[in-house]
Image (cartoon, rainbow, N blue to C red; front, top):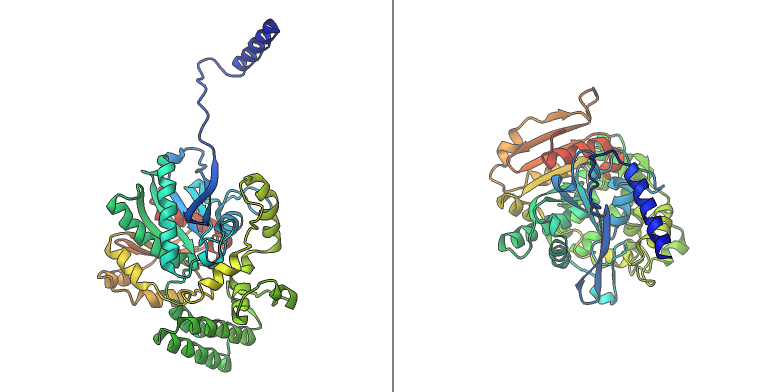
Length: 451
């Protein structure tokens, strides 16, 4: 048997050698293209992450940045929606995505706050209730990640985000900058990009009426009704009644739907999906009726049946580490409900602190987004106390094209010192989904890569 084994080994080795030209040195196996796992950020609170190494034909992942992607909601899954609907290597039909950001960076998806996506808590008292807890949980995660993935400690690290993820990204970026300065987290943090981000809820709400009116989606009567409820929200926020403001925010969306024949808050060129049936509402287990409507519009909308089946079927089987008791998105309703009191709080001051700390801040926004319309973004930017705001404002924006051959304007761009703004044309709330080529170009510009 020993002679036979030796003969087989020699035969295999001979054929392997014939497969390669003389002089070719076989490379050692490369790092795996993807990794995933859990980090316990607090006792009985578990955060799920999924890392993809950059996939560029001419550059190793060490030559490209690392991007952490944060989804909105709160309660929408980056490992699910951001990955398979927006920027990951495959779409939800498991087909290759031509505009995946892996061409320009490694991507770290994180399901946060705990309870989102495949993240979970063992005790319902452990859901995050405010940005402070969201940030502290993420600091635990990032410390663990960079401690164990030392190959990423010196690679430029950026936090990209969308919607409520932008509010979380601002707070996380400020805390991370401080941790890096202190040496408690080893990473090369460079900046954050806030996409269609919920930085100043009031500025968004106050601009809804004028934006819809200017696009012929409200008449005079509708504008008056939307303006009236927006003023109610402003009064609640001015009195620090943030829970009431969230409830009134839901009321405002209802007024808009009635007056616009159900415009889609994520893209004004499309219709909103019908309301859930009564039995679907019962299954949500939310304590207040207005939260049902909000969750249906802004979280459940991202957990469509096809994505839900993918994540709880083939993806769950692939990952092999998801506990039997955890269903993808199963705790997302609780995530959303627990953050309701914090939902309408602004974080403009945090953006000011980031700019003062010389952290690079990019704002990008889709032209057709309503929930976080561009007018509202421009409004809160004008409120910044950043000393260079006047110089930024005086800059003339520049037109951008997806390629040198293209003649169609894809976006406008303006930048000064460590602040930049991208106006993305023909895109709604989910910019990478609507304008994948321009989004990828933007990523390369933000991360200072040559095209």
